Each structure stands twice: as C-alpha cells, then as structure tokens.
Length: 193
Ligand code: HEC
Image (cartoon, rainbow, N blue to C red):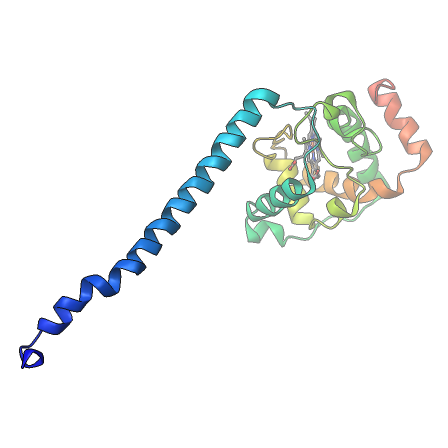
C-alpha cells in the first residue's frame, strides 16, 4: 500500500543513501584544504628563512617551464620568420662589433654568458652557443632581441629590422667564432669580457 503513494518511498530513502557520499565529499575537500595550506605555509616559512637570491641557479624544471612560456609569448607569425639576410663577411663583422659593444656585458664575447653581470642575474642568460638556444627559430631570436624578455635582465633593444637580423646571424655564427674574431671583439670592448 505504501509503495502506491507516489514519491513517498524515494523521499524516505534519499537522506540515508546520500549521506555517506556527502561525508566522503566533505572529507576529500578537507584533505585538499589541509594539503594546500601545508604547502603554502611550508613555502612561506622556507622563503622567510632562506630569502631569494639572484645568484642562485634556476632548476631544470623552472628553466623548461620558463622557456616554454617564453616561446608561447612569441607571436606565431614572428616565430616562423626565416632570416631574410645572408651571412656575408660585412654583415657578420658589423654584428660582431655591435654584439661586443652592447651584448657582451652579459653574454660575453664568445656567447658563453661567463661575465660578472650575468652570473648575478636571475635567471641568467644561457650559453648562446648551446643547443637550447641554437634550436630556437630565427624568428624567436629576432623577437627576443627586439622585444627583450620580461622579468629577466634581457632588455628589448628595439632597433631596426636589419640590425636585429644581423644580430641573429651573429648568434648563429657564435658556435664557430674564431680566436681572431674574439680578439677583435676585445679590441672593441677593451678586453673586459
Ligand atoms: C643586461 C644583460 C643583458 C644584455 C646587455 C643583453 N642580454 Fe640577452 N639575455 C640576457 C638574459 C638574462 C637572457 C635570458 C632571458 C631568459 O631567461 O629568457 C638573455 C637572453 C638572450 C637571448 C635568448 C637566449 C637564451 O638565453 O635563451 C638572446 C638571443 C639574446 N639574449 C641576445 C642578446 C643580444 C643580441 C644582445 C645585445 C644587443 C643582448 N642579448 C644583450 C641578458 C642580457
């Protein structure tokens, strides 16, 4: 007879059926809250006791994430550009002088980044001759030189297209830089780098 009253049975069963599930839900939410708070408090205590130093070396994970984010920040139309210039002697010589004058403070004449300034930067510039940098597209290198990289020591140089593309040629040339060329760069910047 009871079952014939529509809705009665379902209404009576609902609270007892649902409460274990609701309890588990609340416990899960509480657990997440405890984990998040523990991580936040531990992080805060760590930062307060250690502080941040720009002299530290970023870890591999942080570097990979930063690189991926930076690559995303380059508009695809620019990233896919190929260098319109050929590496003639004149262009390379011009870019080499320019690099010695404006870039070697941080990147060093040979592109290694072994300079006092760069070693105190966080994040520091990578060795421009490394695979990580040489794998970047022409367009990415061009964009980084013209626009700089936010939250890092890399300035945006603006500059005209030709100068920037010449610098891209020179970055590509760095892995094969000769001792004679390095000596010529030291003449430009007074043997400091
Ligand atoms: C004040 C220091 C400083 C100067 C001067 C400087 N750079 Fe940089 N550069 C950096 C730093 C720091 C980075 C790394 C940015 C990052 O982590 O994304 C960088 C990154 C780069 C990169 C990308 C390679 C990488 O490390 O991923 C290129 C290419 C580059 N610089 C070229 C130049 C050129 C060309 C000039 C001169 C016109 C120049 N830089 C001048 C600090 C500098």
